[in-house]
Amino acid sequence: MITKEDIRNAGSVLDRYRSSKASIEKRVIENRRLWRRLTGSVADDKTDRETYIHTAWMFNMLAGRHADAVDAYPEAIISGREEGDAPKAKILSEILPLICEQNGYEELWSELWWSKLIDGTCITGVFFDNSLCRGLGDISLRPIDLLSLYWEPGITDIQKSRNVFSVESFLNEELYEKYPFLEGKLSGDKFSVYQSEYEDASGSEERSSVIDWYYKRRGKLHYCKFVGDEILYASENDRRFSERGWYDHGMYPFVFDSMYPYSKGICGFGYVDVCKNPQKYIDKLNSAVMRNALALSRARYFVRSDGGVNEKEFADVSNELIHVSSSALGEDSIRQIENHPLSAVYTNVLQMKIDEMKETVGNREFNQGGTYGGVVSGTAIAALQEAGSKISRDIISSSYRAFEKVNYLMIELIRQFYTVPRAFRILGKEGTQEFIHFDNSLLKRGDGGKIYGLESVLSEPIFDIKVFAQKASPFSREVRNERAMQFYKSGFFNPEMREQALAAIEMMDFDGREKIQKVIGGIQSHAAPPLPLSAPEKANVLYSAAEKYDAQRKKLRH
Image (cartoon, rainbow, N blue to C red; front, top):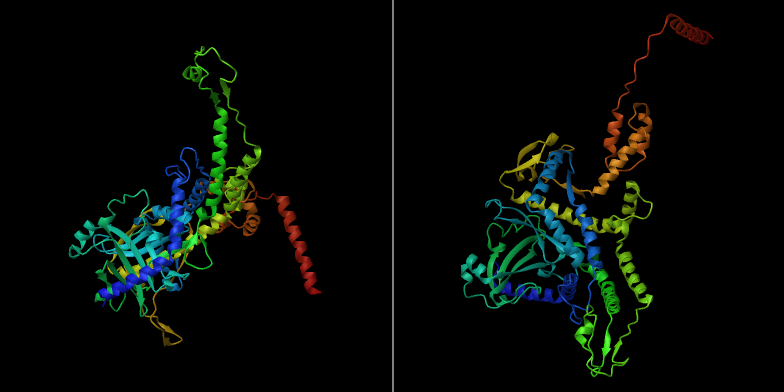
């Protein structure tokens, strides 16, 4: 049984985890503040907002990488490891995208990628929420703030941590409504979470942090929710889960996706960490150049206090006459201030810092749709984009691996909680709508049958998951269309060149090659039948056949 003493010990562990994570939190908070300063809505602490200009070079780079990720929205294909599991895998391949759609995973994918680019790490939570589906419960996918999760220091895999804590702040009024026994027991917020300067912190005293504590004991995953010293729920205190564990799969419901990992640790660093120093000096140099340009664009003057010149009339360029109250108007009464333009060296250094950022992140012209002079072919443009998108493919592949883990956890939750059949609407053959009912009976342990005459062990279906890009950029579709036109112009669909076309396509490598081979292989020759032979032509044919026959007889006789 979990007691208050266990909660106090868990709080001590959380304090230790939190102190070891201080450097990560400091870096993430700094990156988020820098990201907000790019819009100019938050001024630098040491500079004036009007004189310090924030450029958008880093924003352009992050927006480009985010657009690459959106174009590569993932889709999971499930396959069974045994022949009998193939129908089950096909159903799961239809159901899992529907569950993702119900959770708004397309928006979640976008939010996760902003966290990955800015924080360096994004976290997906895969839970089973009993409040969903009208009380029947369903799978819930949620983004987890990196600053609200705590784990054992020094690990590289979240599953190796002995404890995992998730901290979330709630209004005390909300907690009183849901847990009336907490009335008068909430005093202060010991584990306050980070709040940005955009959040209203005036009511921080009326908030409390609710801690979700996940831990492993005797190979089972358990879960406890508490606030302060009060236990809200504990799976070990629940007869349904005390021996079974909270989730049957025994894994923490958190999937980490790091952009560039450190040598040790579970978190990584992102593009803001790489580009914030070049961005800082780009802003400083750009501010200096702009201030000099503004100073040169408007003439300024020294005016003697006893010069007797009407300054308002002098400042108004529409006045043709300027009154002077003194008779002693001299050359030194008003003198223009001389401003010298900056040397080209400084603008060259500014351009060098911009090029440095571009080369560091691989954000070149053709990555954004621009091309070099003379490049007009769609295939050539696509080749340049493919050559320049190696960095994007690298960081997107890590997100695909994380999405595989998310789908594995979803399958395990289906195996545990889908005890009642659920209806799903899928697309059948020829795009028609079909309705299927699915429960976990197909995923439970079954009779393994006999192997070599012996009874095999009971086994659960095991599935393999492969992730591909569901969406493609409009440019990729244009390349496919241009490839089809090239095949047509080259005669690949000519029945008389079928063998040559199949041999050429066999040496190629592109998506959908097998389908094109089937199309070309199924093309039949529709040549006109030969015309009937005349009587002399028939005689010549018969004479030639007779000569061949005589020659064969002589050969056989010999």
